[in-house]
Length: 308
Image (cartoon, rainbow, N blue to C red):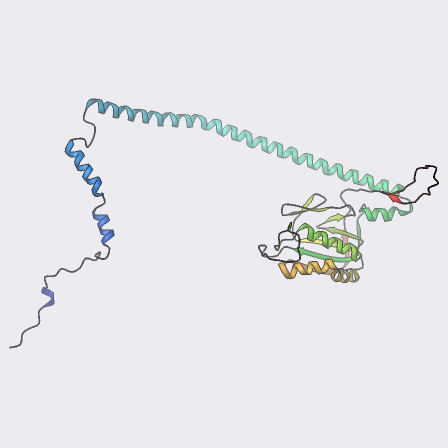
């Protein structure tokens, strides 16, 4: 008679624990207290040193520590509560002082602008009155009067990604090779337009003259100490087609194109039938007089050279 196969359901071997593969984690959970600490705790219990203090002196010392801690916490809370209104009052007074000084500075700045405008108007009137036959030309060159006429519009803006690097047309180490427009770039643009035949130039509404300065303060570009923000819109009065073509063919126009190709600086040049430029905010006129050599008795002739 054939034997029946053993019934696997009646096997005496217990099924494996689900956490059998996590022996380290199981040991940590089952024995949360280190063996050394457990042994020290058991020894303290055997010696009668575990638990709360048993002697009257120990109890009094423990109570004194609790009272001292409570006193420190209470004094700290009371001091903070008393000092809070004082600090709040000082903060309000500081805010009021800042607001008052800011208002005063704004008022003074407005007065300075009014005085500067008045001085500019008086200078222009004096120039028109005493300029003689060349008054109109001097007024144009000094930026004393607004001008309008045909010309070009050049827009220069930073690249979308201003973190680019590498070599490029900026050879000076004083300028970072990135996609941000620098003051030296605008200097070359303006000089290129002057050289190409521009009669008057303005950047973002700021009229330029022969004495205008384009500098940098951090990442900002200053024109006559006034900060400008990109995009930089350059308007130039002149023969639009000839002016635009001459600028693009010039070294400064090629420099701007190199910035565009290398650093993705955005530029656009368009011919305008009419552009309007405001007068310069401040009028500075310098004249030259013939130089007369002192008579030394040697018969030296007057050179006729002018000095400014």
